[in-house]
Length: 211
Image (cartoon, rainbow, N blue to C red):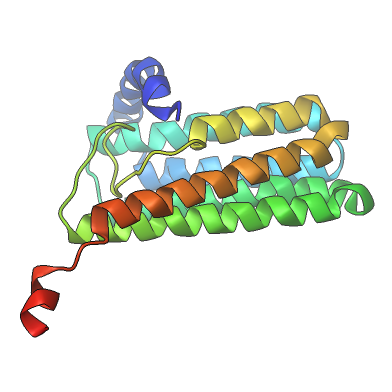
């Protein structure tokens, strides 16, 4: 919900930094993998209870996640780069809650499983919508220039990062926060499925010709 507004603030400095990295010969995929490594390191530090360090690593990881697109725009965009970016994002989003489960399985296990289930469903609704949007030739730049069609929703990347920051600041509240955020993820997925029905639920021309 907040991604479009956040892009207006962060894109100018990211684009400037991305041009500098591109001139230095650093590729977008390298930045993507560096961001993923930082994110996985953050999950590992969460598992060991080093929440302040985890918070710093999460923020650095997400800066890198924004920089890879800026580098690509300043040099050369590739379909694989977009694929690598979204795959890395999904791994990062799953790794942080998993780190909290490892930190305290008895307290966080069930809530963490529910949160990861909600991420799975929400991610499936997002990727399914992107596939159909690509098939229909739809485009949007509400979240910046992307390789995939980014359908908006109640919870997007900005809200998820804010949620991870809150978890690191208040780790003892993981269980209620995870339940609440998971419910909102399910609501986002349901609304996206409804939006997909509105956008793609009509019988296609090819189907009409075969009936």
